[in-house]
Image 1 (cartoon, helix red, strand yellow):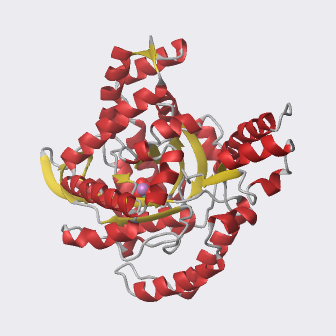
Image 2: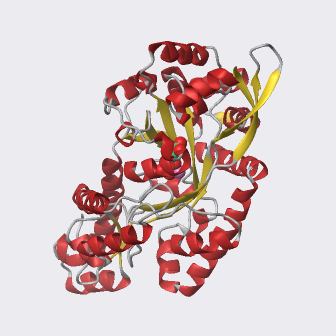
Length: 465
Ligand code: OOG
Ligand code: NI
């Protein structure tokens, strides 16, 4: 019998978490802190606990996390899409980070169906290096040559992808083997494939280029658990010896969380063995891996997102936070003040069409329509208490936040700008598929809750829907 992709993804996300915990001790500390904060938040807020339970989110909370990798070539991107498909993960969204001085563009591989998201929402933010943004032609060619020589997937992983594609699934033993094989692609290597001199040249062009080109594979650079109270975790981190970045990315703290708030802590500095020009090995260091936490809120409609983007842009025009954290206080007060313009109750967010919700008929509503034998128009149902609505959680990423996360781990010396901008078409050509539109997915999830809710109410009213 074939194993369900959701099951393979759960095995995989668990294996990744174990690997990362063994490799990066601070990740384990962070997981413990997040687990404590989440338990405390749920016990202090029974209403939140009920809402999460209705939405099937309580169970996924403990296993929920995202990771990130950076790939070197379009061929790697093409193959990773096939690998993630075995795990029930598909590319959603296009993120252009070149505007923020990071020479990559990205997508997020994630489950897309409600049921799959409930089982395990594991996501991987996947970036592709844009070598065309390296100005020095010699270096660009050298980097391309180094990358063309590497194979980031094991041959058995590739075989099993082919089996999956031919047979529409993997058997249990194959699935377990696949997870172990794919783990190899994400593993850290403390030995570089290049000389220290080449590493330094690549590093001079951009630290990220050195990170992608100098190693055998796209090591996972962070794994991020989801917290229900990011402010509490931010405050709790220093007490456990972890220093977070100066400000939390995203909206300010609100009653009704929107989109995504994130914070990270600095990469470890790790010892690396480089090849020596004269043969043998030479020791150096490299920083790539870091920690991050996130709090997820309601998915916004295009109208809501436009408002969010405008408010955030205005704050960032007013106050720029330095890499070392200067002006962090001013930024936070400006953010709080500016976001007062963003409605902060579920009913306003819904009435103004700013966010997506999942609907359920209420017992009151079912009883009332059964008595009255009529079904009031849709837009009156929530106001009358016939329909209950819960926020649909944002499952994606935010380019401005992602740029802030990249930058906080790169350091000031790497701030630069690139003339060339988004190139979604080239990205999708490499990927070998179109990326899904996140708004379409949320609108569909909302509609898929409205349809059965209305059918139930119609049935209670004695009408055929
Ligand atoms: C990815 C940074 C972006 C997020 O959560 O927005 C990211 C990277 O550093 O490779 O992970
Ligand atoms: Ni992240």
